[in-house]
Length: 425
Image 1 (cartoon, rainbow, N blue to C red):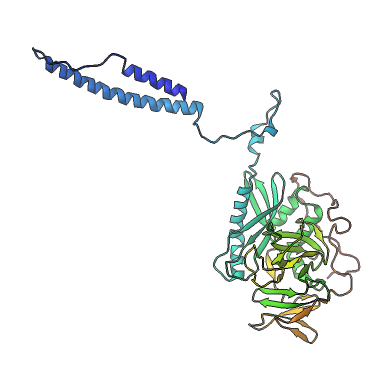
Image 2 (cartoon, one colour):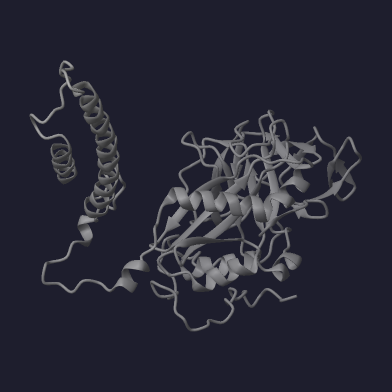
């Protein structure tokens, strides 16, 4: 910019040299006034011409200066000191530099929100019985350089008591953009196969593949799920058009079976929705819990593990203002109605418009507001074991994909083998 100012100053000196001014003198004899008038008129014309020339020259100088030195205040990329190389080092090729993706959480969050509304918004609106949903809530679970695994929830509108529509997602960088896939889709299964081991251990990969399988969902059995509190305790049944809940006893909510834990809309005060994915591909949901323990997403918990206490906290939207645990079943991309399923020794059925759901065992029927006892699970082999259940939840898994996905096609993910004592259907 200094060069620009110097050149402009020179131009002004050329146009208006020091001491060269035209002054008005008193008119004399012999037509002197006419000559002076002509000279002044010519001077004014020259002045206007010179001003126009200066403006043109200044514009040209400004464009040259901008191209040469840049504009002050423009955004420039600051090099990462960790990527600094010695002067004699070989600089990376241009292709390598352009392939380096922009990993920004804000951009990822926006992309996931837009994809959730586009791909899952219609389903959520049908479930809620409304024309709108809340803004998607996105939480990152874990990431690598070009991959992210996380959770998202579409909140019901204010005043609705519906359970929130939730989903797991995988996102990867394709070109210079994020591409997102939600559980229950073919793209999610393909992403599972390609995800690096640093993002997804092999045992978790197998479980999520079963969770997204339509065949596994159709054969999923709930008889080996207990009701979500201590066996032998009696709680009250709560029911509405959206599902069931329970309240009473000591208020402590427990895991219905072994499973991997995932969290949605987590709050600093220990709130949010908890989902456990079980080995048969079905998931149980627990909502409105307070005082939740610090469970790391993806860790394995066993049946009876403490998950929180009944409450009125519903950060994902929806829910009820009555202290309870909202309990539900889910598979991949949709809610599974509890009607027709047996949990904790009780089979749930749709009741009348007022009853919504009832629990039945033998010749006894429990209506909403009445007591139901947790009878546990029947004796027997139970659900197939979860991969990695033996030993520590963080034990090493079988080798998965390399740090970055291979270009070779991989077969469909195998599901965990069932114990020999369990007959396959």
